[in-house]
Length: 400
Image (cartoon, rainbow, N blue to C red; front, side, top):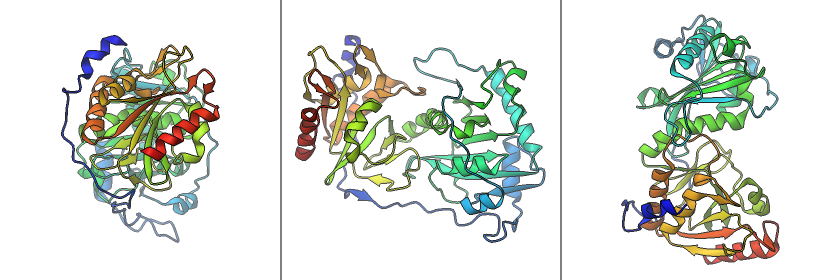
């Protein structure tokens, strides 16, 4: 990884960001959508929205009978929604600019054919369901999302991932994401358009350049893969709008907010400190939030410290090391774990350059004077389950 070292001259890449004196927790400043297009009690249409139908037509979906907008959970259940069994490991195909990720996993012609088949299928369904939401818990640099589904159960599952957003926000956003959900489309759709045989339960296809996501079959039940796809689509927009999307977890100790970059197994040893979310975080100019809905607090003050966990049993990396912003950016980019490298600790799909992310990360640490530490979670006797290891960790938290 020594080839990366010249990029992290701390006198370079400085980017002015305002500091913050905000309190530990920010109450939400969002204005939520006020109403759905159906009666709360009867679940019947009370408003014909020409604007909505026109917007859907612009996305290739022609409303055959009725389009239901922003139904809440009880309304969706009234329409027949049920809680689907959770799935995992379904195929994810991505096209567009994927830094360091090699060629696209689905070609532009194949995605175009798939999108045409999916929009035709949704257009053939009498009742379709539409939900508007956002990725990112701060409206300053979030990404608006429109879900279009042929099934209320899929909408019940997917809508809970997104933050609520004001009415008309999607139409006013310069780069919204569109998610097409075709649960009842033919299981052989992938093979019929030349993608080959896919998982019987469904698959997910994302086009970063089109800001479009397609979920076929039961793919909506695979929340982890769906979030990975949504993150890949939203990261470039969030980054361009001044946010810093990160594959990290948030820890709270007393009145201190701490960011932890580490493998999943590490989190098990500090579960009592974790804010319950594994959805990724976003550093804003004056605070910190989450990519996806957490069911709890949505905004926090800037972190007091950043911990980057490395795994090294050779004895070269000490148990705990304080890092300069440049050193932290170097280790952030490397993501060293026992001979393997996980750039920026992101095992998912890349849609922005890790090097550019590391430069912005360094600037944030430097401008806001955020302390950073390298933590060896596999340092011989002080392994991830060792008491001494986490005693040192908590001691550093107390001094942050």
